[in-house]
Length: 251
Image 1: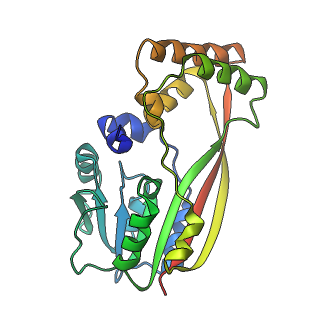
Image 2: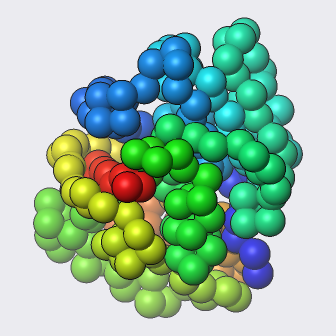
């Protein structure tokens, strides 16, 4: 199964429940890459545009490439009033950019869907000399603050979580230095989310590809089991987020 367009089927719910990034992250990327009205920026896979507007506000020459046609329409409706907003509905892996070059290429939890042997060389070639690659995403710790609740939920997974295809996309961001990039560095910020049982179910069903594609008879039993576990634990689950940013440059 190709999971890449899963979220494109539910853009409104995905936009509602996907965790947002922090202002400090955007400020760091813009400062590191020296983005202003004279610079060109490419976003890989903006989805519904959770990371888009801070870059549009710099008045840079912004281009997005997005695989999902519903996401493209969603972001056009959301950002179309910006004169510098441009988006292409295509697959980054095979899209021909011609002579276009960029001062910044960035990805908000998208580039890990692309094999590194494809994404890193292609981004390198798309960047101008001295250009920046920024990759960021949110890692969530559901274990530390939930104690016995986490163990109970894992039992629900063991019994009912029967997915046809496992999500196996991953990327070792450190490997970018093997493709000619320099000045690789990492920064992060911490946040905490607290959800009720119903909120957590909505979050899982809107942002986690395996949960979205889970079929009956397991789907209802799984979500009911998770809901019951959280309600019995006081109707609260705590998610500790690490908002991670990886920055690197083309020499």
